[in-house]
Amino acid sequence: MKKPQIVVLGAGPGGLASAMVLAKAGLPVTVLERLHRVGGRCSRIERDGFVFDRGPTFLHYPCALRTLFRSVGRVLEEEVPMVRLDPIYRLFLSDRGHLDTSRSVPAMEAQIARFQPADRAGFRAYLQDNIRKFERVIRVLQRPFCRWTDLAGREILGLLPVLRPWASLEKDLRRFFSDPDLRIAFTFQSKYLGMSPYRCPSMFSVLAYLEYAYGVFHPIGGCNMVSEKLAQLAQEFGAQILLGQDVEQIVFRGRRPIAVRTEQAEYPCDVLVINADFARAMERLVPNVLRRRWSDANLQRKKYSCSTYMLYLGIEGTLDDLLHHNIYVPPHYHEYLKDVEDRHVLNEHPAFYVQYASKTDPTLAPPGHSTLYVLVPVSHQHPNIDWQQERLRYRELVLDHLARIGIPDLRSRIRTELIGTPADWESWQIYRGATFNLAHTLNQMLYFRPHNRFEELENVYLVGGGTHPGSGLPTIFESARISAKLILEDLGRDSQFLQPGPLDPPEIHWE
Ligand SMILES: Cc1cc2nc3c(=O)[nH]c(=O)nc-3n(C[C@H](O)[C@H](O)[C@H](O)COP(=O)(O)OP(=O)(O)OC[C@H]3O[C@@H](n4cnc5c(N)ncnc54)[C@H](O)[C@@H]3O)c2cc1C
Image (cartoon, rainbow, N blue to C red; front, top):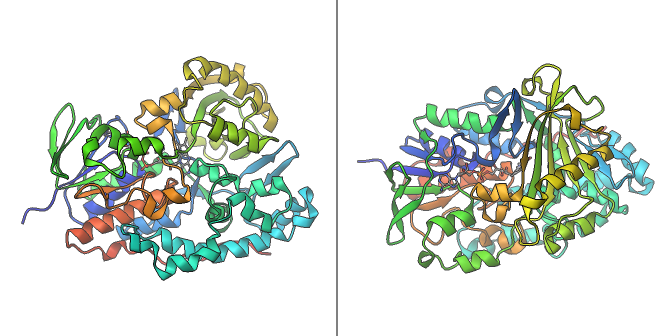
């Protein structure tokens, strides 16, 4: 009997991970990618001898990726050499000094006490609370939400007292820390989802916990090496990856796709896996008449994550006082976040993140040189901000603000430079340039997020940040596992090898 042809639309980490496991399961898989490189937002930039990650730089909770590799008979650490970072990052809080976060509880307690002695004990209590919470949350995130009834199970209802859906993340953390700046230290991670902690659901307190319990890793060569490795393994297992293939049309028979078209060719498909940015792919490739829940009008009404302003700098010399990851939180953080999420205007004193990866990984820069990756969370595309006008002005502002974390004026040392704005992300086929997809509000999560087995069409599955469970790398890998498992089940094939792995014990240094 002829095997069903799988077409994966997009070679981001979600698309590549699903291609890898489906090819391993013996199915014919073709991945079509519009760019000339794999990895999407998690791809590699090479310029004048410098190497940058385009997007993700924090690889946390590697257990999700480890499970995927194990399912195809590979060992993560052998395939993707990586370094666990400790200190995890340096956090500059409201011009009150910095915190070097660490998995050593005593080291953290000593630093917390410097900010607020009364909050010293809060850290252990926070960790204990999240150990329990995470054990429950992970089971929910590991399964699909395709039916209403999936929300009504005992598992979900039992979660309510743990998840405290009535509280925002910032409010929830008041149980452990009285100092507002310390609360930011354990809540700013909601920005990984492109959201404000004052709005993000409290279940996401597990994000900071994951950093302490399971570490933050730097893959040698950058996070893009994960994409490159997934592509390599997918091909080794028989998948075909075709680059420079912009899918311009999905050909439907009724609600079922039968082929996809690029400028170069038409590719027949029995099963379509969409990894391209969800909202943009719907708007561009799926006729509005085929969509009710996710019609163009409904897509416009949804809430989207923030975007990012980027500087990728190759510089002469080194910056010895800087850590690998550095985060600056401004004094008026809440007001800054309102500018990003509500007012959609540019803030003149923004939060920012600086990655100095060549400190850990000399493969990224020529000898005697360094790489700096600067990310400023800003509003997604909005008529209030004209990036053609702001692009260079904001560069000057950001370069000046680097002094706040001890980086001297770099202008004369810059040897290569790339700027990225929300307008650039939008030109990458990302809806409103919202780099972290649909926001993770409770009404856009679980059953309310676009389903892994896409509810509006037949034989169409979603992977990546726009579907369940969400938009960080670990959840994207989970989406690939969940969707691939559903595909195999729906095709009546063995899917046992895609069972979620056992929960790894946390690796916290209590003493
Ligand atoms: C600046 C930034 C920093 C981030 N930092 C982190 C981090 O540190 N840690 C973390 O866990 N996550 C991070 N993320 C979030 C997330 O991990 C990445 O965005 C991730 O790459 C998203 O993966 P994805 O599988 O959803 O697909 P994407 O990476 O969006 O890939 C989708 C692919 O589909 C292709 N495509 C689109 N349309 C078509 C078409 N019509 N035809 C063919 N191909 C098409 C695109 O070109 C792209 O290659 C970050 C994201 C950004 C943008």
